[in-house]
Length: 367
Image 1 (tube, rainbow, N blue to C red):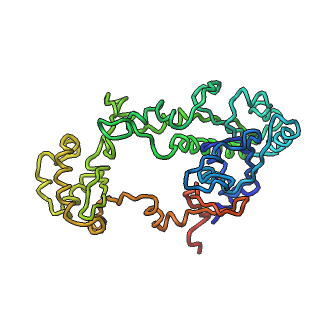
Image 2: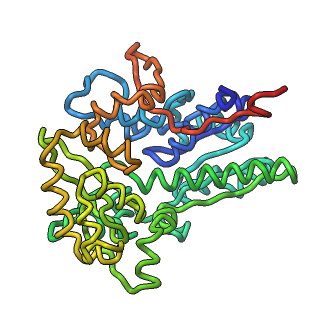
Image 3: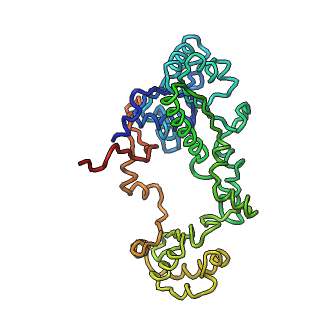
């Protein structure tokens, strides 16, 4: 694929650990860049090397978690307080096109690996800095779940009347990684046009806030405080609602338009629901959601999951099986996104690509 060599010749030095920064490094590795990950030798490297599940082999050098965002990189374990190791790191940084850092600002300055020090010597350098909070000098430690709490995600996530639930991936880290990728790509474009590098900064908190989308505007414009609703959507019904089928499996609906609701009622042979004033518009369906779900559950319990999915697909009604991870990897799309790499001990590691786009140059069918 074209994108596999898109950044061939680009050199990225990664002074970052855990998830957000390394995800950005892997993004560039997948696109053909040379990515050198510098890890803290004195602490055994990136802390996620040791984040192993009970089922993992304790003798392998890294965890599955570590593998998820560290494909295609050269790994150097250096002690930056050691003069020789520091010289190696400095040399690599001054040869790089991009430096990715989640250093604490005071630590970076002490080591001379901060943006100002490096860019003074290397004006074309793009220095990409990840911070936890909006104030770059705020060095309060923060992991993803802290930001999920601070940005309101925990308060909204879970079932009504139950405690908050953490999202099952470190989504704030991944959102920040996407923001940093975008900023770096803009900086690369600017460098092509102007010949100068840049400092780009992204905070986990602002990345999380930027992703609140309709939940934020529901508050800002309507004074609505989002509450825990489980799978349900605050603005649409039936959307995110799930039902048990005759075989005990769960089906999920995502009905986003009036036409789709009409199609749903038609294929379920429940045209009477369309005539019921409690269900005739989305707004009244939201008010009468429990009543609607009770009627739909009575229908879905009469047949198995795959029969319903086939019927709904025929009628263009968005619906899905709620898949566990083995079922996810029954999907050809998931299989096609697997990247493999041999670990230093010969173990085969596997993870999914972070790049989910394709790029084609020129006309699809040139004459």
